[in-house]
Length: 384
Image (cartoon, rainbow, N blue to C red; front, side):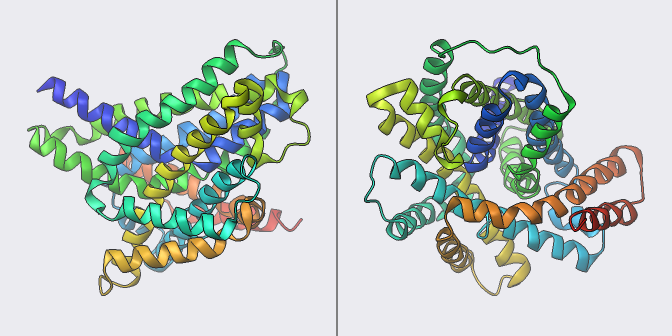
């Protein structure tokens, strides 16, 4: 019975890692590593805080609400909470996260297949995502037991060879506040906290059914915690590995676009094998995240926008059609569109996560004042 409990924790932890590790997770540690080089430790501490610790803390705090994001956001008011949820779904779903996954994969493949057409590539990607999301209840098992091992295999090839054969050692004595802040702010761009609000519903439902079958229904919170530790550990290791590779190759990456950094590094490290290995690694990372994002987006629209008057499959089709259109902006265009929105809204969502966690653990009641104060401050500061 204990072995079954451990198995559930491990498979759920791997699923969490796979869900979080997507396009933003590939790009931003590389960007940080290239920019700070010798200040890598300071910058990565900042990145770990906003892109690892906070998102998984958010996931655990959502477990206290049994994965019910409606109850979680209702504390700021019914209408305000719903609008926040709608905005987040747009950011992590069809207007941001999913097309960002598609365009990053396209940019990587385009280096090796110059004639690749974005329109046809987006259509093919959407069809593949649809097929993987078709059976809603199998998503967690698909991510944790099938795609994640493949993802780790390809990433491991890149990281092990790159870390053992880096062109030069790094001077890690530099530790400045500006480097920490830089990593901190870049971590926002992963949007992992926003994704955690919705991924938790998938994970909680899966844990409930599996723990009930194993006769350990009361262990949901502890299982979610252990699974989060597993997922966070994998994510932190991968982040640090990618950042280290970018820092150690920074002199060769000066003029490389952000969405092509991984492919370029792979080419430098793996040589002739780079095209296949990098393409597969990026494809796995983006596919696993796109599946999770598409599922939660379709589920939200089905339940809370159309009030179940429209089924899961039609809602999934709507999500993927919008995704295809936004993908035409390419990676750089999508990032440029998301950046000002995230700068204003992300701190407010972080504040909501903190006050709700304090509410469940310490009985802390104020929520509207701290959340909307932060939102107003960020809105004003963005114009001055």
